[in-house]
Image 1 (tube, rainbow, N blue to C red):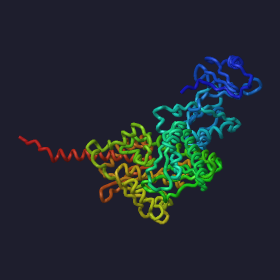
Image 2 (cartoon, rainbow, N blue to C red):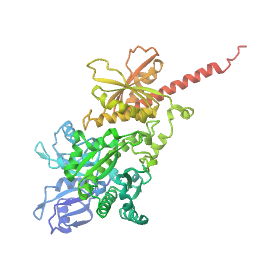
Image 3 (tube, rainbow, N blue to C red):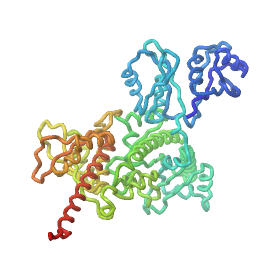
Length: 565
């Protein structure tokens, strides 16, 4: 990460490279190479990062050139202005807790580290969870008054923000549109000329699913391209439809219809509909979303209908897809982070997009994820070839959320059960004032992952947890009493390692009386991936115990005892 390049802003029109050279020399700040001066700003390299930092501290907002206070910041290319910020001029005696709570107001702070400087004020480099959070933090915190100090906030290079050839497919979230069937011919054009032209112009791949749903009034179109390419293609298609409508005296309004997987719709809508209302206000459009009841196991997409002029609909498409791409990338990042650690996880089976039979490729995942998806390593090679064993997990959810999980006339829980391939039952309440209800999930590892994942997602989507609050639930799994010691480990070593590895809280309550099946409960509390990882690791320990028992039985029964002479 190069942080020796400087951006010098707020320069007067007549500032020359010589003026800047003199300024740096007078301030005893070395520089390498020439000053590249543009209208109103300039760039220069310092010998290293610490000199760049000294230049920022000594000059930014403190020195005038031709009557204007200059700004000096790290030079960050647009593609690397992503999630990383530098916050300067922090009061020297400020408590970290105060700074942490201030930063957390704008999103998830993944990392915050102090930078060594010669000044009395403090400097930190902060990494937010995503670009939007970082952008919001810059807007709100730059110039923010804290104990009579004015904070200075600027981007620093985010190497993760730089697109690489290998990462590119991950951000290929296709734009899916629904168009009236009578306009499909005009979109394709004579011998495919129009669609070829759109493809060439926007450097995109466009699939028109004409054969799907024969006789249907609308047909889906899938556009694979960069976000800009998708938006341009969408606008051209809307213009073609409008022209065709005029030519054929079609008088009905033609809204823009976007298809989006249900997994992302909750985050698009936002708490109390805030995100959607903001998009409507910012773009001057009217947006509606098809009801949950329209979903089926085979069609997990919702229809987002946007009404307005072509210009306003195009703006709304950009904002809607931006939110969907962000949700997708966050999900994939979280999955890839844990996938190689969670045996038995098949990412494609999570159904982030409809199956590829409908013309959409499954989301791109890393090779590590694909490898993890291929088998169930902890069960041993021989067992991996067999059907993985069914497991039972008791997941505890807020009692108020039971209705949302069951759905109208039990629709949601039935659909969830079919999707996951698991049995899902909700146990009766333990009492009238019970705050939690137990969900009993029975099925193999992949079914557990899918069912529990959807339950966690539903609780977040239905706002049972705050927008900045992680969904943390408690899960119970039963283990044979003779294996409990193996889960705990000598002096609690195994359970401590388990907690460190998974970030979940794992407790094997002492002095438990085993049940009628000679089993005791292991309690796991954490966010979804932590909880899953802990479950898989515990099942791995149990599988080892079972294998060792089997081997001992084989040795005892299968081998003749040596005769005494």
